[in-house]
Length: 431
Image (cartoon, rainbow, N blue to C red):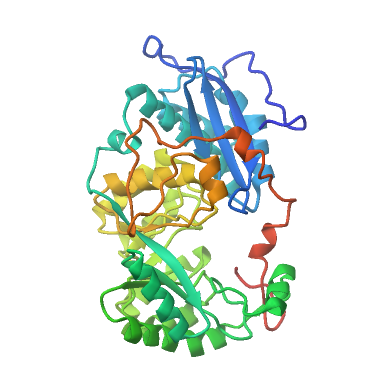
């Protein structure tokens, strides 16, 4: 919550008030509270927007695990005081006002902070209307959202066995990651305590040539073992150059992937049309994007097949729902980002978009720990490979402040080290 170092400043006057009066009795913001907790192991920044109506509040997720303290400061010192006194119904007006308040707009820290209060206002709107969030977005377009889970392994045999186990649990979509011996491989667990220690200290290295020699053949072998009836996904995690990405796209054709994710970093997005021309593998990208406009060239050029939207980093539901509509118009499907560092509050927003949009493709679904489920009653969890929305008003997720206090966040840099990586020649590599 707002700490002694970051007290929420009083709001003696309302800056740039809206010139309209609003509906009689519409809730007004009285406080914006921030909470840091880590029941999943990674830091969560949870926001509670309180109103002048007893018991009525909204929850939001500001999920950037690498910079939680900076996000808390933006919320406690800037956005919270600006929000107090405003009509919670004016979401579009408030979003634009807060977005412009920093003058230099965008970036993950500012967008995550903005997203938290934006989603909390949508939560309040649903509660006032007595409707679940997906109903506010147009209602159901499907019964449930197909989800995908993650498996990894040291070789194709081990990965194929784990894919089969996921299928037995009801999943039709499975992301597969394969370890490259001697390389700090994204998405694959350490082989032994020595490798685990290298990862803790970030002294291991990434070898893209070894990856390209081994992973395409391994993915093709996994496909041969699991057969055609399961959708396989793979995440490159932006670690390749454009030339290397072209090689990968060509060589994984036999694996018939559902999609190949983040084969290029955002900085190299202009090369996606070349990848599209190089093969038929569906391409997915977007979890690192912090501005919906970053997607527009890719949509216009039909260069990707899936938008990996991350609602907190894009600034909340208000801009993201517009992006989802654009994806539908351009024939691109959405695959919202849903790893463990997106809290159940953030996942509830994902599911509402999934259920209501014709553009839905698949939903990443982390396995929440028992501690996380304790802190967030009502969290959406996969059932037989699918996610169903809550029918409760608003997000349908609660936050247990007392339970959260039992899971404090770690010191700065503890989780941040995850993104530190070097190549074999000592140069800094993308994570």
